[in-house]
Length: 126
Image (cartoon, rainbow, N blue to C red; front, side, top):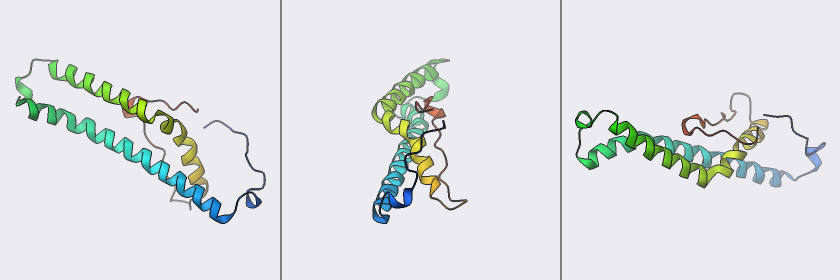
């Protein structure tokens, strides 16, 4: 993550304890929301091929070479594009949210960075 300007020099006197807890809770909910979206997308991709074959009544070995791959790649690309369209703004801020949360986590309890590689999405805030 790039070096950013510090927002508060004296954070202790900037917000109340209850305000801080509320903001941290919102950040954690946002993180979990994006994590759930990514997990759902991964599961969707894994299940889509099996459902396509099941619904068509076709066996994988009966399809012409390359046919199945072409159909699923097209289908998955469209699903990925829709995912980015719906959640792109959340994806772009998740790195800063994760960083914020981890600043206040105990060692060993940090939230891991979320993996966007499977949807071929690059975060814009780097």
